[in-house]
Image: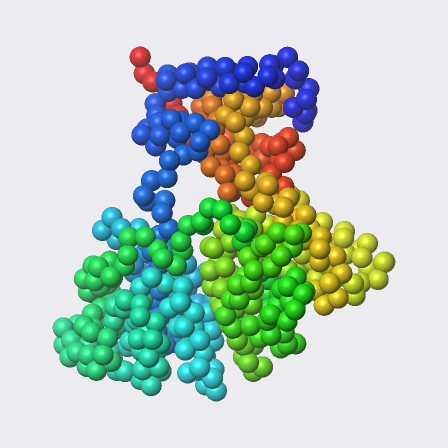
Length: 493
């Protein structure tokens, strides 16, 4: 493909750029636009006006001991088979959060699975799981098997619920017929108020249950609050267990703020620390986030995923820490992808780099380029948390990532750029048709989000090409970019 620089005949002054964008914007009057389009276009360079629906969605967590029907109920609420269901305890693993809606209310539903049946430590592990879920929720749906009745594990979770002060809906599951209503009544003894009899498998009573849940769920989440403006920039330290997150935080703070141990999962709760780097204050959050005993080798992904998500929700940039002494793992990639999906700026830090000799470093750099071929835009820092080698280089990488995350392109310059780009490199013709870009605007930053109005579908390969050229011409280093296309038809005369 040619480069944007091949076309030099288009005006380049800001005034001419704005005039060109105004003409393209006026041309959209010939196309069918909806109210959302009009609001986006009216916002101009100030970005789109946030509707109330864009406020943080309230979080409803589904908790309960193994095999009481949590995932079955989640599927019933979602109206589709999303969560994995199997008649053995502990099937749910990685994916835990789902967008849901009931009676016009949108919310986030969290299915709290992710651990395996372990008779030796079952009670403690259910409590750990419930405690994490409750902490990260606005309201809780506590499920009990009505055919079994309250167990000691259920009572343990009840104590956590009372301690948290979070609103709770008590669900008596597996009430498949009116004859089993008496089983549900027995759950009044838990002291959580009215038990709602349902059959997650057949859908019986699910509507009344959801009405009760909506009554206690706030309109706007308090656990997924929007980022405040101003103040020190907020950095989440993320990564799989035992990669050195706590050691790095101690190295940055120049003192032992966090317990460090060779056993994975020493850190239990996120630790927020105000650290001075480059003569400026930064908020750092250490997110090891699991307490894993030696015999408990499974289920760590669930806790790590919840803790990482919680940290990302109140951070602006994430440092994804990777152990350079071992090959990149699937869990490493999953953590990095979680940062991208959350729309946060990203810095990838390779810890224990000082353990590599010169020959290994060269080979490792090549392997890293292959492993992270989809993320060439993320700044990388090689360091040692233990010896503080190159730790100071994090400041420049963080500043670079945040600058890209904050960047906004004026609408005039953006449309002039896309005009040059499409003139030199037109979209491929498909089915005898060639989609044409009518107008584009940067709807938001933090992270940058672009909306393109076009006469037809823009292929994903061409979107990636646009993204690559945006990065080459405007920076955007260290930040994910979202490009959405709105296909609009011409008005009929």
